[in-house]
Image (cartoon, rainbow, N blue to C red; front, side, top):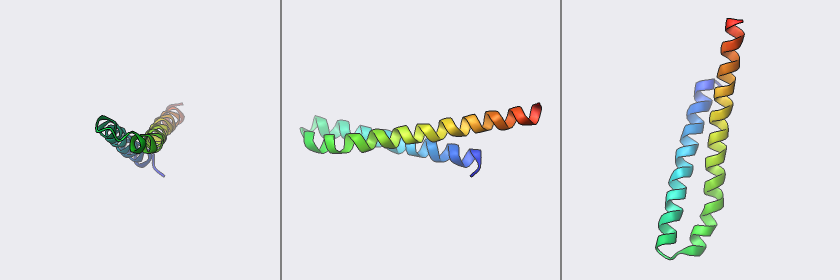
Amino acid sequence: MSHWVRELFGWVLAAVGLGLIFYVVVLARNRMILEALAISFPASVVFRVGMGFVRMAVAARIVTASRRSG
């Protein structure tokens, strides 16, 4: 998988995770606490996985650049 594809996939997952977190806030403000609790854990997992993909892609890009230059 290309570094750019992995990074793009990570940013998409991070955006979906942030959207889910926003949805959790909306549910909590509308007094739907159980629904908000049920979605909060998957939302945080999706966001963290997305950030992991971004971190991995950036690290791979740095390693590739250092191998080319040195």
